[in-house]
Amino acid sequence: MYFKKVLLEHKFRFMVTAMLLFLEAGIWLVFPLIIGEAINHILEDSYLGLYYLGGIGLAAMIVMSSRMYFDTHFYARIYEALCDRLVVQNTKTSVTTRNAQLQMLFEAVEFFENSVPELLNNSVSLVGTLLILFFISENIFLACLCVVVLTIIVYLASSKKTLKHNTLYNDELEKRVSILHAGGNILQHIRTLMSHNIWLSKIEVLNFSIIWLAMLGLLIYTILSSVSAETAKYGTIFAIVMYVFQFIENAI
Image (cartoon, rainbow, N blue to C red):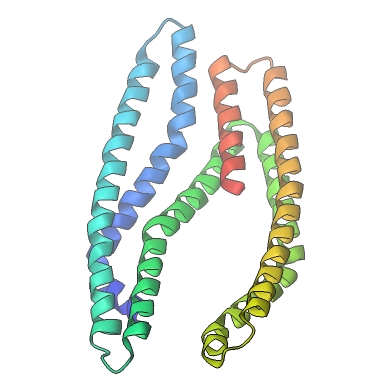
């Protein structure tokens, strides 16, 4: 609630950082295409593609450095506002509690500053990559869609167990303060936490292994399919493989 209110108060700055973020994602999205065109132009004794590559590289540097600089100042203001409202003004709570709240607020703001942009960047890149592959090669586009469907099925199949152990982990974690105050069995508490953590890790490993094998198959199919196309240029083949590799990276 407080976070939403503070964001609304700084909505102009939030819109600027969001705009820079999507612009950055768009630039990264066209990079393989520009590199592929540069290769094709070089093979045709033309340097035009290299000029395009240099221009897009310079644009990427300007946008990325601007966003990083702007984000640091923007989220610093957000953190200050949240601390003032949730901690500094709330003098009734103990020093220990307020210290914990400050730490959790810092982690929340850091999540929005670092993890959310990465998530949005990957999401935009994933959708954009699929759209570009649709226009370059329909067969590879359909193969990517099959991998997406398989990924969704795998995670849906394991979601019940994941949520169960994640909930039990958090429930047990909430008991820590009361266990410490009561002088309870802290070792048993840690063992219970680690038990749920190990289960979550097992599920993650199984999901990753299944999806990675599918991704590896997709990459092999892409290379074979691209090379066997008689009309494909070297730069186009490179761009397709790069897009599929980018798709794999984002999906993973």
